[in-house]
Image (cartoon, rainbow, N blue to C red; front, side):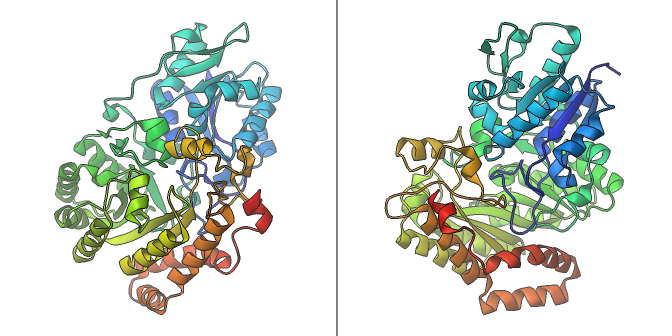
Length: 493
């Protein structure tokens, strides 16, 4: 075992702050995402022989002081802190606290925010020595190797760092990982370091685990943060055999798990692979249900094949009911395809979670009404309505910044006092307050429809496997349903 000890940290912030999701926040339905990218990097470090301790403070309900107490005897020589845009000010304060505790320890930050703003991050705090840009699994490993060998960080691709003279240096970009089968199973990392019972996705059966079978997305949606900062615009895939083997590992080693969430940006972007994966899971006798992110241009044949293998639900970003808005955000899909997909999903007996977004380029009160009409007509199993959230490194951020639609540049204002989403985008004729009010109203209109309520009651009575998920999400969700998400001063900044 190598001597350098490494702490990988999902830093303390709001309780149940879900930092590693695409729009980091505290979620009204009680959702808590796994620190999935940090867990993969942890696994790579352990695979290389380093002693690593992964701590997920928000999931464990740990304060900064408690984390510092827990790692005092561990004495890490390197600390890797995950970050996000709305938590970055907090995350820098965490780094400074650890620098005081361990003055000789190298502290580096990872994640979409620091990828987009590496120099600004290092300028903001002298406690942070380095930032890993983009896909950071091997960058973190190479920094650890370099530190242990006492060599120069100038040879580590994908790194921006502060040299011995205090100058900020950006090394060459790191190529994306081509052979994803070389990475360890992230579920193995969960088993060693985390408590799967801490994590909850309202659209999956509890408890679940999240894995990634392929990285990147060939589409160019303007708002989507991972492909624009971490994983790139391609779809790099693990082998079918490797994915199926992880399903077997989860079933064997984590028997309490009721479902697998495939967190690829879009599993079904390669429908031939999806069907091949389904056939391999069937061949191996898979009994674990799974949920996956999907586009709405998937065929009935693919949905049917995946359902036979265990697919229970797909999470689909419809975003808008206005074709003009869909074109503005480069969704590369039509409203008509949404309806065709919905019929295919019904026929294949696959549940659908629909995502709808307000405040996109070109949105108006009229386009938002079209979006609500679409949501009701699609009548998905569950739906979420959320205001546009923009993050550095995305085209959406550049659009809002260039047009001066941002109410503030203070990243701490990306959240409410409770840690909930707070949009800072205000367009002419559609203010931030208008957008949030629409989301609140759309949520109520959708979930309080007699048809929806009756369907959920029937589902609870007739399907015990779904009843637990519905009741767990409802306990948290419904306390927000009848109160405004934001006070007027929150929306106006």
